[in-house]
Length: 280
Image 1 (cartoon, rainbow, N blue to C red):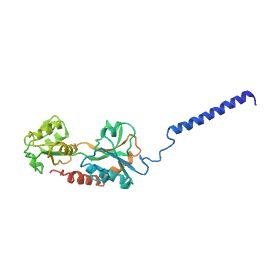
Image 2: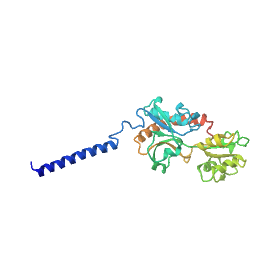
Image 3: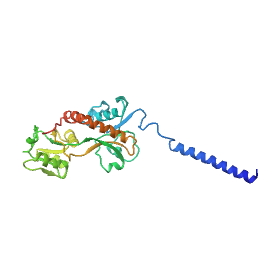
Image 4: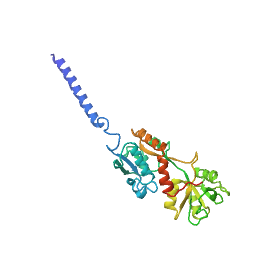
């Protein structure tokens, strides 16, 4: 072998060794291969909600009880995916953390996330598990206190934030004899209710739960208005952007919607359980 040929072979061998080492380094850096599971934790279904999680979405801030509308929905979805209740693991996140770009420590997150095109830029959504309805609320001593039908509301002063689905609902579904009273915001409408300028106001049901549970002393939900084509926002389960589970989770939600489970859970936890009956 000539010295020139020997040097050439030596260079080729060295290059091959470097390529092999580079390939090994690249594999190690990328996590080497497909993940063992599509789920955050092998053998578990990791579900996130807020801290605290509020009634009636979660009872007593204990989602692991399965009590409350969203806690119950989470366990129903888990069952559709083949998980036992004992395999559901709960974690907490803020609302903003859940819909921010980046990796997540949950398989799904539910805390009344409205499905919007803007949020779809950073996270995935399942198909809707709930569509908001409009609700009528009042305070103690109001003429609306004790009303149990739309007819009983029509002669009263009813208001809502202008330009909203709630305001449309006042006009089209209650049709007060004195006309709908418009306010610039829900806060303004709430203040008008507190000072007696109006007898009742209309807001979406999640807002009604918050106002009557947190901001209005003695506040109560008179009832929900019937669903219409323009009823309100749709809530979806949040998944990490590009999650391999999005299609399966959506299929599970679709099944629960089609077999009546979601409506039954809404009736149990949002209508009967939270004392928000459907007004007729």
